[in-house]
Length: 119
Image (cartoon, rainbow, N blue to C red; front, side, top):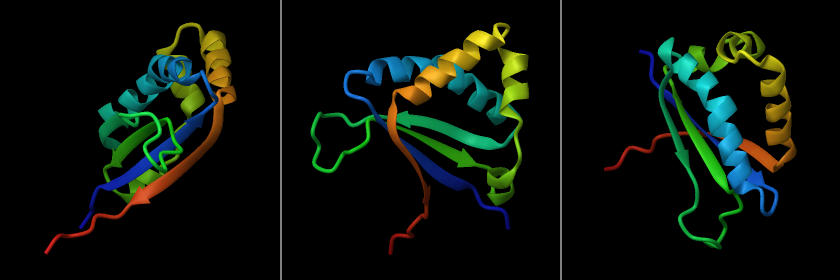
């Protein structure tokens, strides 16, 4: 039986650049995710940030959680460049803004979430 797979994508952003990163993410990356959601690859897309500054070990500034349809969807090859060319009329601007978004990151890591059944 195919089961959905959740993966949390954490981003640690350079000091003072969190807002710019989020704006670029929503403008340039979210449309790519939404296009893939329309195909059924993703069942859900959620975004989070810590509610309060300095929450203990909150060494991340932005988190994106994707619920994939199944493991096959996780491993599916997606030509994001071709998808971006289809979505964004000014492909060169998109490419430059995505490069800027990556320049703002200090760290990025992915965590596959394993549901734990409650008794």
